[in-house]
Amino acid sequence: MNKIIYILSLGMFCSMASAQIDGRLLLELTNVSSDDLTNITSPSTGSIVYNRTEGTVYQYNGSIWEKIDTTNALPTVTTKTASYTLTAEDNGNILKIDSSTDVKIEVPSGLPIGFNVSVYQVGEGKVYFVENSTTLKNRLSRFITAGKDAGVGLVATGRDIFHLTGDLKK
Image 1: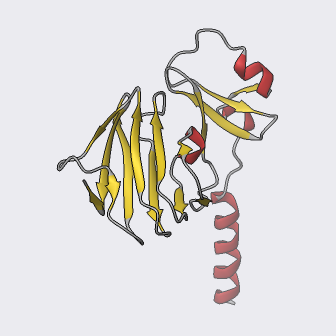
Image 2: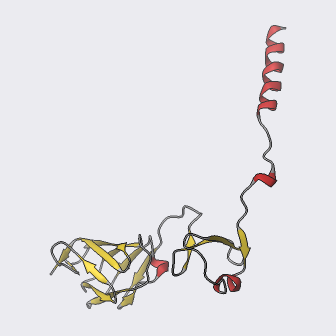
Image 3: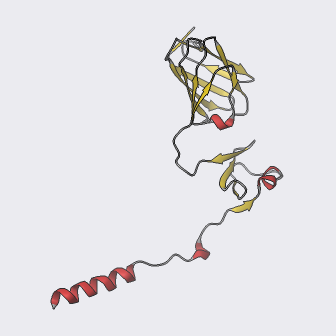
């Protein structure tokens, strides 16, 4: 009998301990379409909105609206076989360069601070990193992959300032 009373008491306590959250107390983001997003005038750095067209959250970095990854997805591996200019969509991802001839990766201005990409040379053609209104830095002034299966990382450490590390040569 004591066991039954104990189990019933525990069940009542547990049901009272779990409360519902009042929906009026939740933080609600401004809900915009993709067209509305591009027409927002003078947003403050750090502003966030929910883009209902894409079903994702965007944050303004001071110059552009950036998609915030809310899925905790794994990085995307994309194969490139010719010269390529990095884009904001490459952030956090992996580029696999598969070419028998040398390839240039152009690093343009406007990518956000914290932008990072991993690049792997899987073909015989070396990968050359070139500036485009940006500054590339490497302790030993090396900006070319060292050979087949070389891997490098590129990180924006300041506005239009990038550090390149990894298996590089002059």
